[in-house]
Image 1 (cartoon, rainbow, N blue to C red):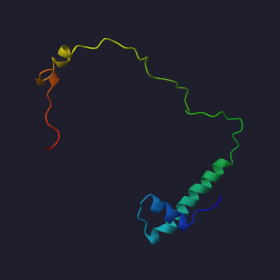
Image 2: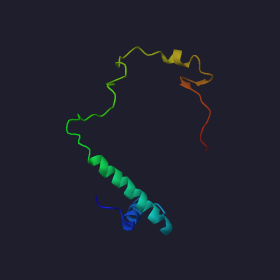
Image 3: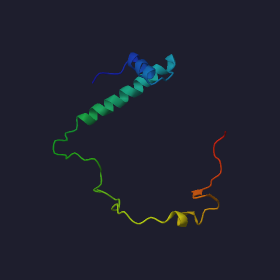
Image 4: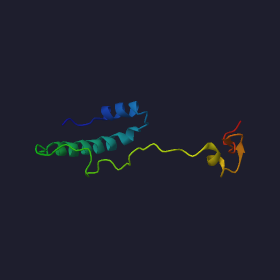
Length: 97
């Protein structure tokens, strides 16, 4: 696997709009090459007989069925509201004018 160079790190930093000092480049080059080396070792693992999965557990769908039920009336919804204006909830202003 090809190793990361200072030029590569500078290019990625530019794309990500990151300011990397010249004295930090060697550290990042070394760290990224270690990560790539490890990823290369993972690629060497034989996964021929391993089924592809999207989850490590057998959980399929934990949600309940979507059943349409009758809603409470607007009048009942407003019963516990501290303040109302006509048929609406009245809430404190949360933005500045």
